[in-house]
Image 1 (tube, protein in one colour):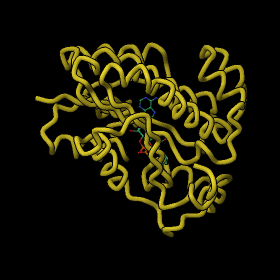
Image 2 (cartoon, protein in one colour):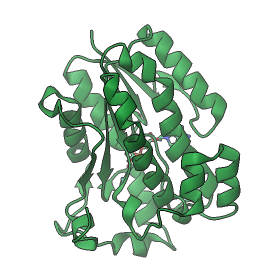
Image 3 (tube, rainbow, N blue to C red):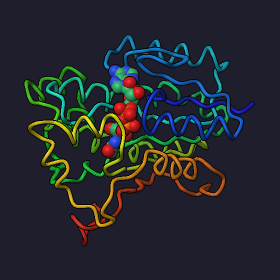
Length: 253
Ligand code: NAD
């Protein structure tokens, strides 16, 4: 039986991907804070290591598919917590599962966000310390900033971390890509959209298609990215956002 690991499997986009892979016959190990086969808190180093250890134990050390969807929204007060889950909770798991993926010529999709490029300075010290410093350095760069200042930065760093691994991972036979969703109806999005102070800014983001996505519309694209039909897709950041990024940055890609 083919084996898949999904973080953030208990809700939203991750739970839709889980349902689609189970329908295809995959043995799916979900990782989440609760309602998952592996419960772990990905905001901590110990939680991330125990998630990797327990998932590998359940799957006998081999993984065909990895989807990293666990995340927290930009409406939260704790900017450090959001960066810990969104960046280290994705990238440490990615690296921890690398050998298990290489053993099966695996495929991975990591969830970034179209906010990764919304007025983002690529030299922002939060981004450079996430990518190149220690976790302590990154937390020092964030200080007391709220998640509004770290959500896009963490998603930008995730996308660059994927692209930085493309050469080495491709040579190992692993396909590694990221998806950059726009506004998608999930508990995370609802928390941001209904937030008393940042909600208005979130819902004012233009969407050419004039609606938010359903979580399963993102899951459908992720399923495609993991499929044989996408066999040559590697190192790509795929925007699925109803046209928002094209509207905001028409001459950049
Ligand atoms: P969601 O809230 O429905 O699901 C996120 C999941 O992550 C939840 O099951 C939650 O329990 C889990 N999670 C949160 N903190 C965790 C922790 N410390 N340890 C383990 N699990 C934890 O949200 P979603 O919208 O489906 O989010 C999926 C991904 O998509 C996230 O990475 C999010 O940043 C990204 N994203 C979402 C949107 C959107 O509009 N919904 C847009 C762009 C990107």
